[in-house]
Length: 129
Length: 129
DNA sequence: CTGCTACCTGGATCGCGCTCCAGGTCAAGG
DNA sequence: CCTTGACCTGGAGCGCGATCCAGGTAGCAG
Image (tube, rainbow over all chains, first blue to last red; front, side, top):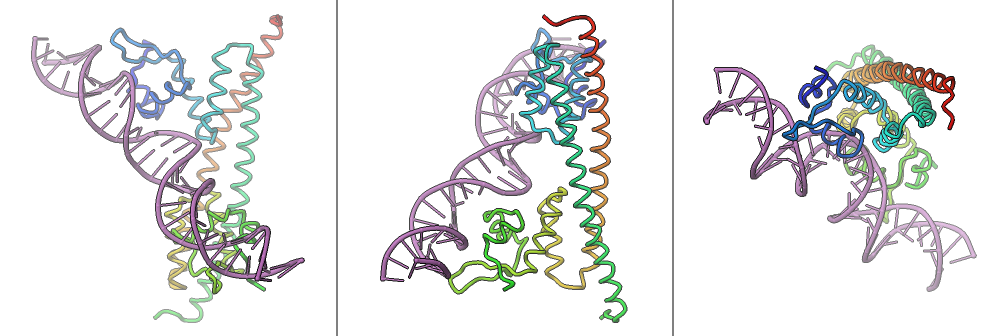
């Protein structure tokens, strides 16, 4: 127990096998276990770390930033403050991103409303040939 | 008046000169005016169309979707219904995107809170060498 | 007319984040 | 044992959305 094969981890995290290997390659994952035959196995901790990566990735954090975070985590507890700062900065970026989306969405709404009135006008003028 | 040089349009829309040319090339812009010498000039309509493109792009619409929209717009008023439908679908996608971001942001908040408590604990235990 | 900047074209290149492939090895069920 | 499917490695390739470049022309201020 507490060991997962690459395939199981792919299923649980939604990352592809290739992505898992890629993440290890570029240093987002480290100290991934290996069987005597060279096959990877993941621990519960690895899986929850992947959960964090997924969350950061899905909120648009670039890989080099995730890499910084991973390196801080690797160092140990003396980097807790730096890590929380990085997350807080990212949180602000996410907030900003949402605000931007809302603003642009408002423009889309205006455009949609304009289309509706245009369509209504067209209907009234009897254009249906 | 009512004519803008590529450089002016770049300034006003925030798209680079290269991007303007690229958008024309791939069919997001059409019937862009040319001087006798072959230099482009943009009308007020072109600029506002670019405003729409910017809005769609910034909310994550892929180019091939923008292209569909552009083609519908090119056809004329009989595609109004299709265009509004496309925008409404995109609007739902944006809504979804925001919801996703909020969900993931909540996880980030949890993580941040966890870090703060961890840091507090570490402070209490007097680790400051 | 001269200079100078803005603009032109076609095509190559980039950065990101994977994704795919060939050619092989491992490991578990029958 | 043997098969079969999951996994391994190194490296090439992809899709998107631009971005850059070389070598040349337009067009305006002085």
